[in-house]
Image (cartoon, rainbow, N blue to C red; front, side, top):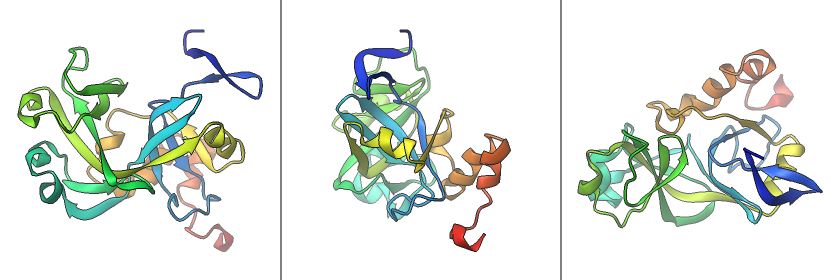
Length: 198
């Protein structure tokens, strides 16, 4: 069971962790919180899942909220809407320059990407971090909820690339991720916002 986590099961079958993967909203997902979103799953366990929406930038500069961290923020250096749960909380994603070296306050999600504890002094991380992105709130699912939504066709579950969380043009992430899949997925990237008009 190399990629499987023991003791996890859904409907009698083993559950593979989806941590570090992308949820890409299908055109049929009608929840306005997730319309054409790309979510990075930062945690997925038997009790549920937690992720952040990568393509919902706000106009609030990181400097206005977390001034000490603003120098590390990737362009656009603004807060992102991570999801509808606890919008007053912050989650910080970071891309490490040297992912093998352990760094205090860094919790790996996948490869060089992970979360950073915002109580750590950002000056201590300056040489280790290749960029951060700060999210207000997060997206959460209870036990089995996300798996049901995937089975119902609300989400595509896709592999993430290290740069997905830090693209310069986050509004283009949804079609970009779909196009790189090729085939029918690439065609979905060109669907109109209202699929009934197609």
